[in-house]
Length: 420
Image (cartoon, rainbow, N blue to C red):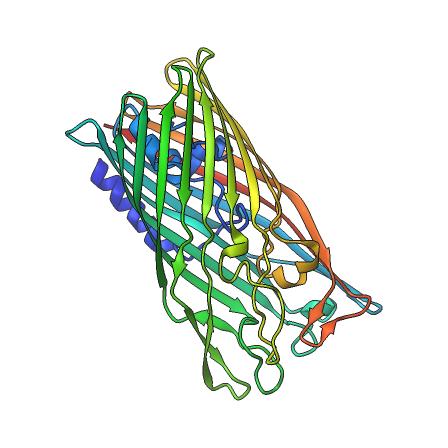
């Protein structure tokens, strides 16, 4: 059974690694239906393999059993762009479609019970949208008058082996590498110079690009009822992305840009003092301001090249609760608040990466088929949010102009957990 589930997870990850998700900025806010139904809170509440491996690998030492968990999210988004220039105002809906986001994690208690090995393979970050060219919408008018059709797809997959050691009966620590691969596509490609006819090329990554980092974690049982945890994911240092583009004559040209994932610091607590209840709370810090591409200033050079997205570093709060009902059923609910990394003044630069949500409500549950196998489902709603700013071209701000991004989204998650 383990081998079949691992094969299924590997197939899903291989077939969908180019899909992406809206998240805490670019970072996906939860991993799998159990973690999602808890609002992503799990730094000190290791109730499943994905929950523990995603936000605090040291907490796998606190799990009672070795475990394999496979999860798939289905993402539904609603993105709209409205712009005004002079006397013309237009509104256009994006059509990014529905796509899956897979994850799996495996934890195994070694022969020496002090040590627990874990392996996570997760879709950790990305964004996606598709806006058609629209002559009635000034910002989407064909180039060079506007930007024309806007399509974007960025996905980052992380392979995370880890070893957790129980230092004492109440304290564990963990460490491991983060092996990251990413795929990016963007039209128009504004992160390199314009062509001779003053239009931007399209850009599609020549291949999957690779990078790496590390993660650390700690987990401590303060009392029988209270647990605390902390973790740190380093920045994912990625190699320079290269893209296939075309000049004004249709001849190939090579485009480049630097994109790194930000470091993430998490602290959390869990409480089990009420019968059949678990409560969890996490606070996280995403350092986008110091991540290449995301944190670089949104300004043009003399060739029309955009330097970056100018995102701010942000905090996020995750709250979750679980209630066991009988021996087989567990119900969960969660809430997530994210500071917005995109300022109003950067609305124009983030039409292709409109990751502007702030409030997320989640719920879900698990049903045990037997003592070893449980099925999990979850739903998250990302409440509608907007960002409005001026249209800013290489020649400067367009007087009297405005651009508004509107975004809402829903996740439907399902998966299976097998304990050993």
